[in-house]
Length: 268
Ligand SMILES: [Zn+2]
Image (cartoon, rainbow, N blue to C red; front, side, top):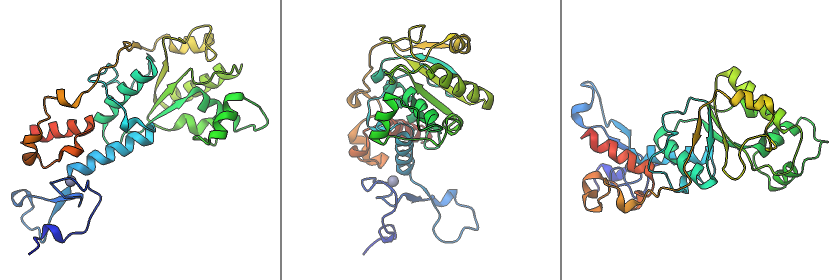
């Protein structure tokens, strides 16, 4: 005979989750329910939180949820600050992933590149030719109605420079417009350059005014080494204990998940 549990259709949970078996919700224990509650009371299963966090990562930065994560990051806790970050491309990704895993499913962040900004800017005037933008449009990457909409969304913009290769004399101006706009809106920006192509006089996005804006932003240099968040080295991971956790091994593949499991353990 089927228990009450199995009668529910498959929901939005992880099908491998032993807590909810894919239903996405779990019953609230009797002692935690209000006295007058009638019928089954449920709450979201931890696996849905994990999945929503991974989806949020992808919305902010495509491919981020599948990347490696840094074990720790100087960027953590500075999500609301304007920062100038110097990091290699893989390091940047690993560190942003570390932060995003801990910010949960509702964190509005977005990775944009200098080439995206130029695309947004040029969308006001389609007659202007720019080699990089032309390439982006051919690849049908994300487009914006205007530079303003690109500037206003989201809470944290991670602006990666050095993707744009072709020189366009308007680039510093476009960057400034975005920075001024975001400063006005009091929204945080992490402007990111890399060791091979630092943001200085020779950079296609740099001019004196850009330098002036950045002069009082903290400059964070991420060391050029990638810390591997190896699953087997994680102190919280023990497949034998899984039964008690109700999370199967196949779900233990991201640090968002490990984080959440850690939180669950602390609750107990
Ligand atoms: Zn679940």
